[in-house]
Length: 258
Ligand code: ADP
Image 1 (cartoon, protein in one colour):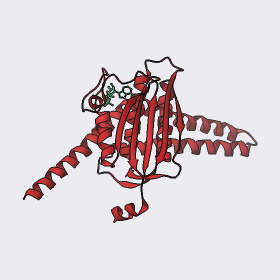
Image 2 (image 1 turned 45 degrees about the vertical axis):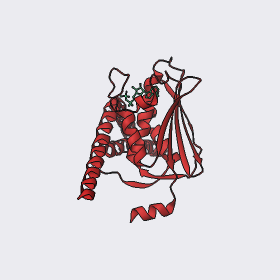
Image 3 (image 1 turned 180 degrees about the vertical axis):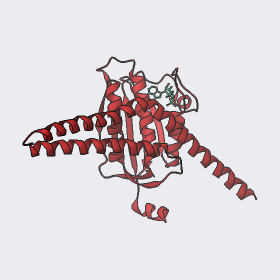
Image 4 (image 1 turned 60 degrees about the horizontal axis):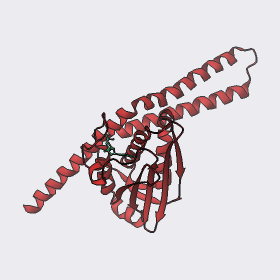
């Protein structure tokens, strides 16, 4: 009896976590909606203008075929960009249990930065990426881990608003330390106005429009990956968030995948 009650409580907690993660994703998507619309509209506009150019070329007596080929390649690339944004949106909107797989840390971090590039440009933030864990992998749920990084980058952008445009820096750094993989998200923004215990607590926010769930959810996702998240102020100004995960050992995946 005792064991089944505990199992039920565990199941309920897991369900609550999935629902909270889903809510946090919806919140992130709402924050990013302007950027997402732009990320889809831009390739659509490229497709439109290239199609018009192709039509003009075709109307000429001897169309330049090389030019046409290059126009078609541009259309294809723009279509693939829009498709990637829509796929990512659908993955983030999906409600469901985490799906674990081996993930290359450097590719994960670079992919998120690529996804956020438009948002960072819009907010006047210059990102730098220092990938120091080539080939190293962790065992995790891609969408949840991307969510954590997106939260940290969004928070960094908010903290950077106090700086003049042109001075807003964001650094993403990865490295492997023995059996651990480490990611740092550093900004030169306002720095932390409260202690680590407070900022990771649910519903703690210093923003007028904040929900205060981003870091609480991020910590729960990181812990579900047997990882840790910590934060410190950079003496030079700004905050440094550090994530640590156990590096994936292939044998572990084989056991869990069965
Ligand atoms: P929200 O972004 O809705 O406020 P979070 O849980 O993501 O919720 O963040 C909680 C609080 O932690 C923020 O309101 C802010 O005070 C602080 N914080 C988070 N990231 C940073 C950062 N990079 N620099 C300074 N303060 C931060």
